[in-house]
Length: 630
Image 1 (tube, one colour):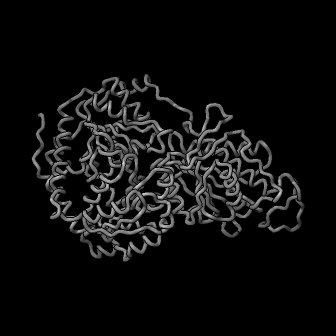
Image 2: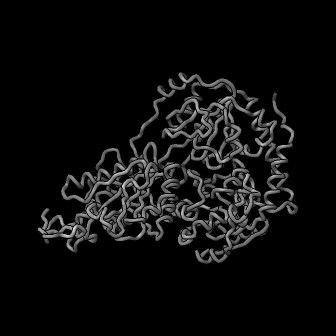
Image 3: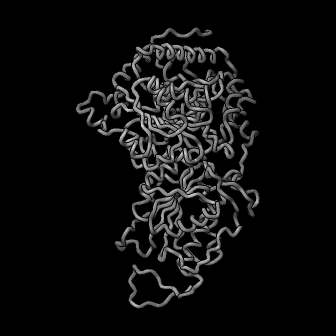
């Protein structure tokens, strides 16, 4: 490389290069960016979500060429915050790394809420923040901030390789970095990885820059219509885009068995709790993820253990399994049942459950955690030990070793409680047309409408709690999803769009505040493939069930109702709109929208709904204990 000497050069001016140099900076920028992306594609990257900007141009041009070659799929989204949640939806559905690209300055900071959710949930995002060159930092240059470790502890790794460098060794290192970060992001402890990538001008390559794309050194892949990388051959032995994204590490059954024996499994009656993310697979991610379900159900049946399935566990739907329990949030409000069913130990898979009733009831019960990623999910601090093995391997080892002595009476008591609760629920909901209209009928209608192998993405706050109460275990194979890592109401519409664009037909269930919180996500409404149902109860009525209810200025400061017409917002997003206020109207709207996009606004009177729920829970609380085999 050679530079023209410059006297009294301004420190903010870019370096000058000899005309015709083979290291001309525009071309070097492009080759550097291409090498990075090729490395990522070699390790499974198939989708890149971008927001427009100048400083990210070298990466974007490289990505354009990869898209033209059928190796990468690009999605431009104006708002970085919306783009990040859209990428989160893609990653949630596919469990594969998804890249985010933004320009320098405050732009990547808008990713932060989605980055937090990805970190807490364990979803693979590759955060590519373009940056100004180091010589501009600290001089007050435009759109230049310190982006170093911008996301703190919420990323699995951070890298800043510096300005692009010429030479085969430098490009090899950049390609290796791309492969490395994709593998880390989707490895044993998946999550976001941040790369800060400075570029100097010129950002557009010279006209004679013949950038050699896809030289074949790492991989040759194409991207299918759903955005999944398909392997077309690779020179890296054993690595293909459809293979596991890290070398296959099988759990050593002998070592695992030894650990379980040494653990001296707790005595007495136990249960298995499957929290959010216990079974993260979806129909568009099954090719790369082993299934927990077969080993779990074999273990539970052999050992006579009830399996409590959180709505977001991935295990609540599907064919009838006698050990599966889903009505616990209701029947544990019955003090007699709560005492009779109190376990001596609990085996926990996945994160903390949605149900506060369940969480409070289990406090003080010794727990054994299973987390292959080594993430502690023990908010009550009752864990005796954590087994860092695949949950399926642990279940199989427990079954083979007969680590727990089966107690048929114990399981039968749980089954009786489950069955009685749903009989009470059927009687409660069967009071129509006199029964007040509430979220229960909405969820009941959704459960009947969604076909096998489609998904429902549920918002936080009240909707996910309503889903927990009213979505009966069993039935169709519906995948229930939610952003439960940090449990925020932000980014709902954008995440829903991302799940749909991953090739997984996904319905929506949200509240009015969560809907309004992500209005920029309405710009993505054309990417929705299924109906969106909005529970419009005029504000944040989760507080109606909390101690905040009745505080001074309660409605204005806690409920925060929004004076907006959802019909107008639906039109803004190009969505057909239905407003319903009873079950019959909802059935007609679902029939009219069919398996297509549209917004169904379910108007709910919050006080009527509250009284209906309290009446149901009181009915369960007062019910006689079901016939128990004691």
